Image (cartoon, rainbow, N blue to C red; front, side, top):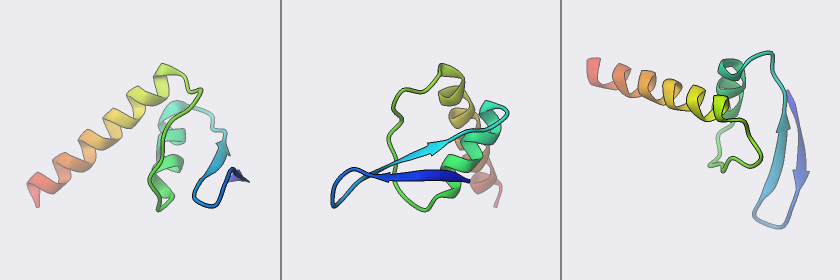
Amino acid sequence: MGVVEPVDDESCLLHLGADNPRDLAWMTTSVDADFTLADTPPELADALRTHAARCLSARRKA
């Protein structure tokens, strides 16, 4: 799915690619780890907000 590049004892870089921002958001959030976006297009941030809103909405309905 991607390439992990160690940075130090507590962090790494995950290099991902996808056909569209929505798929990239899904891949990013499927990793069970906290993350910070670096050098990403605004479309990815938008896709992550949409994904987060969908998840929060599902929680309110449950």
